[in-house]
Image 1 (cartoon, rainbow, N blue to C red):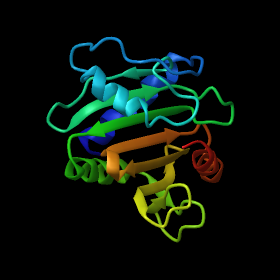
Image 2 (tube, rainbow, N blue to C red):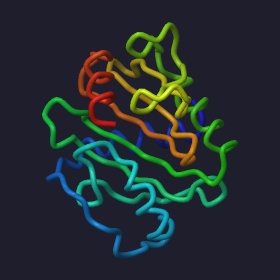
Image 3 (spheres, helix red, strand yellow):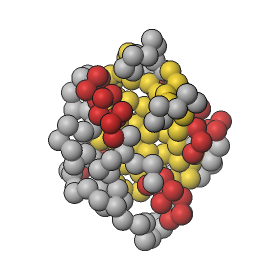
Length: 176
């Protein structure tokens, strides 16, 4: 498993055990050493799925060579939502693509919704233009949705507490 994938999975497990918080939105006020600039953290925070914000997600240390900001989140305030999430803002499209491939490598992939394969392109708000790549599957018997938002060089990752990929996919389609 790649270093990024290992770090992603470990951070998600740590976040899951850290507990949950209330939903909302706050602006990043500080720039803890090694977590990226508050501007980059706020840029990434604008991409979070419904219910997540800087009040229930935590800035993580970044790989300064490839990442601008990383946020990890625990259980969604929505009881039907993911058990954990992670969002990463990359320095370039190449770094984003490399991380996406590494992150999905260990998953048992299944098609997302009505797509014929995983990964596949996803489209935002009914647009015919591709917004990025999405992969659905399971890792250690838990459903995962991993997607890129190419225009923002961001990688997002949702993980459920169950293996129900379709339920997590439907939540993602409704909540981003």
